[in-house]
Amino acid sequence: MRRVIIAGNWKMNGTIVETENLIGALLAGESENDKATVVVCPPFVSLSRASELLNGTHIAWGGQDMSEHVKGAYTGEISAEMLLTVGATYVIVGHSERRQYHAETDDLVNAKAKYALASGLIPIICVGEMLEEREADRTEEVVGTQVMGTLSGFSAADLSKIVIAYEPVWAIGTGKTATPEMAEAVHSFIRKKAAAVDAAAAEEIPILYGGSVKPDNAERLLAQPNIDGALIGGASLKADDFIAIIRAV
Ligand code: PGA
Image (cartoon, rainbow, N blue to C red):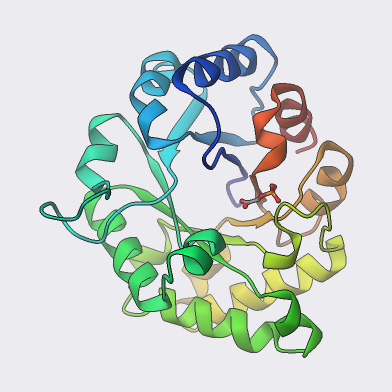
């Protein structure tokens, strides 16, 4: 039985006070679900406060990105150790917004994911095609290359500790969602690709869907055999919506 994970990616939203309010609402509402692990990824500045509020609760927390370097002269970057000191257990790597706006490549995402694993963090590795790639029927080629590139050099033991998120770029923040069937086809393709590294470990990787997941489409997406949870942007900023998605598991 694969783990189900519902993760909120808050992106560049919310001051520390807004983070406190959102966490307060999640803890006050019924955001606990015995079938799912719940994770939130607040902005770095709010992580320390988030950790104080979430410590000892059912909600885990993580970073939205991290450096592939240990420490040093990398202005603006956050290290794995810094995430660990605020009790983070997860870190998103290779989000399409990092790939698009910060030119992150598969090699870089691979280095980040490896260093996350070496540090004891669980990387949520994001992949997904752009609209023009889907329209040109290149989804499998693009996603396959991303999966193999970001998992390069991974052992079976590494695979057993990662999470993958399939996020079609055209569905992120647009209100357009992949149909459950479209998403399932890519999820099952990703699992087959990972099976080239290790078949048994690939069976156990939680593969999350991301891209305009909302309370009204979550249940059908999550019902697909290879969709093991969701990575949620916009709807994770509204406690009621996020809780409704958790309940859809
Ligand atoms: P969205 O974002 O839910 O707002 O589409 C998803 C993501 O970028 O992880």
